[in-house]
Length: 165
Image (cartoon, rainbow, N blue to C red; front, top):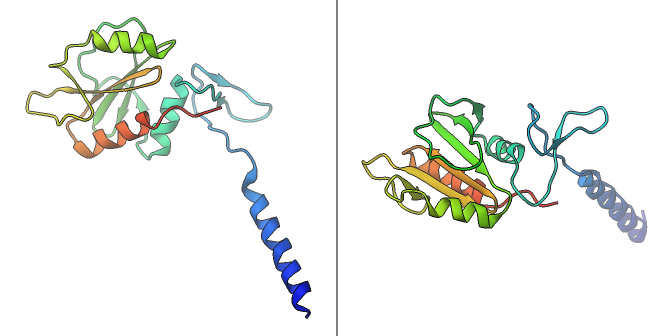
């Protein structure tokens, strides 16, 4: 076989193989939540708005292998904040998150939290059993866990930012 023909054939095969995975991957969610939209004949999907929504937080936790389940049994005492919290259980920990319309409202709410009870994810947990506070864009997350590895994983997921449009 001619070297030019072999090279052209190889190039075509590689181009075809590279083009296979270009279909848009859509985040799906088992239960519909705020920000979910149904597509024709498929499961509900999360709209990518560039901000966190109920379903994008759940999907990110699920994609990280944390298997979030609805429930409040692992969530401690919650502060009184304007939006209603969404509560989840991930393993032996509880998560509560609050969705705000924008970053400024989230910052304002976080500024009012007791810093002896709610500590930033960058601070180590002490024997006082503090709750980890994780913030990004329009979401404020409270993680009820003393496990440093779990704290780091959840913080990485949230501080990585919301899915972009």
